Length: 130
Image 1 (cartoon, rainbow, N blue to C red):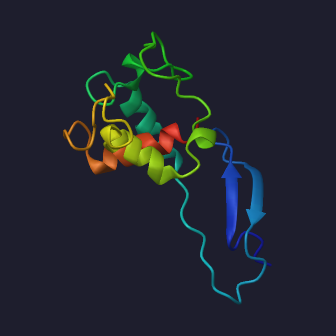
Image 2: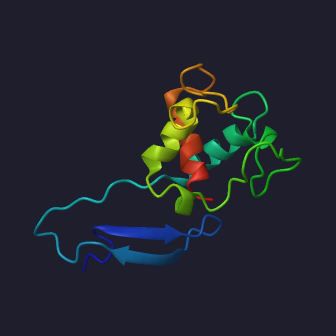
């Protein structure tokens, strides 16, 4: 039996035990492969960048769950999956916010080189978990 073939599996990060799984393809006749999901390391690195006052520094302007001394200039970064169901739109908003709102005071993290493309991807992975 290959129960976990073509599955999304959630593990408890502290114990490594399986919390739940969902088999997306019940047999491998079609040879569909699941896209890779963000891994915990990417999300942790994104959180570290978001809270880092020398790099992302999202906390300077936004309230983020788990952050201390948040700013109140920007909207709270909560329910991000509901606000940005398309991850690419969230990424575009972080990399170049002037595209959606030319008068924004949010820094363009991508075009000004504040964050690399890889760092933006990590921040997006973290924010999309909120």
